[in-house]
Image 1 (cartoon, rainbow, N blue to C red):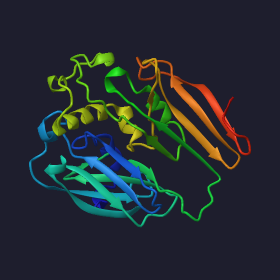
Image 2: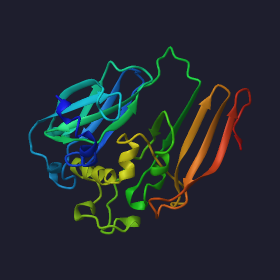
Image 3: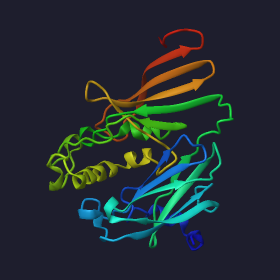
Image 4: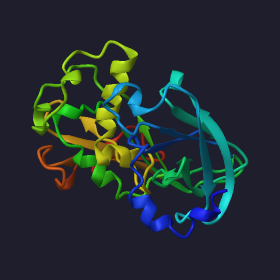
Length: 278
């Protein structure tokens, strides 16, 4: 079913935006053998219905153990329906616990980017250490997601996004802080389902936002801080003896490639109450 695409995989993935303008995402559940895969078919994200026909269309999916998608362990077909804006949610079962996997969708002859995920460890497995991150409040028109790019460089087990994932405010013609042209349909405040889908498409148009949700090996959320100019994320490292939290912040949101530094660190040690700044 997918075999005829294997030889052309490397070149086609680089061009695989097409119908997958929203890219792909993965949600890790607490069931160690299960994962949820997501994409939306929207070749023209800022047009009504995302540029898709008003009918059901078949979408193939597959899960592999390698990034080249040669060693497929699960695959199937699902219908993308107009009532759900041609979004696709696939519950994949029967995966191995604590493993890294890659996944991809196919609509007609258009391949999505290769997504990346991992399953949770088995409930019988003792986990010696764990690193994860959490973030909240990403607003597209208040600056670039510079911290997302830096978080993608971290080795993290999972990321928790606490919200808000997007803001309902209208976007001005210059895209706020980004100073880029934005179409007229983004001026009104977000109050309808169609308008929310437009806002979601705008947020997903940022490459570093797509990177956080699965379409690469890395994940990179950010947090909005009190001064309105600094962005970053919180990295937590946990083992049997201590819990360390590092507040990582980018220098500025005015540059996509802004460097990052550790603003503050806190440590909770086994047998010692409270957190200590280190």
